[in-house]
Image (cartoon, rainbow, N blue to C red; front, side, top):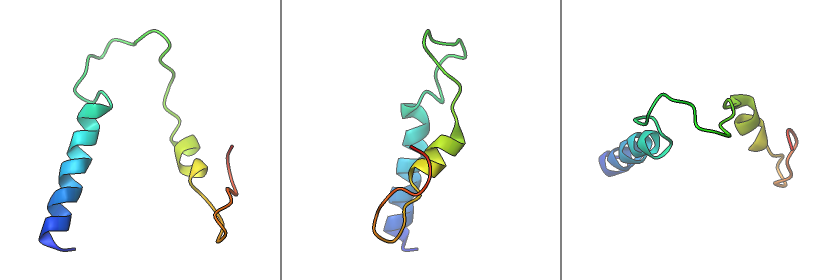
Length: 56
């Protein structure tokens, strides 16, 4: 991986933690639901034609 690409990746990676509340309060917010990683992963599984093959 090139140096500039790697630096850009790290910047986006670390900023994503702060954008999603990584540094936020530990108190639950009204309407907060537990995060389901399987839903996120399976939502992006597609076949060779771009059709979703798993999840909703």
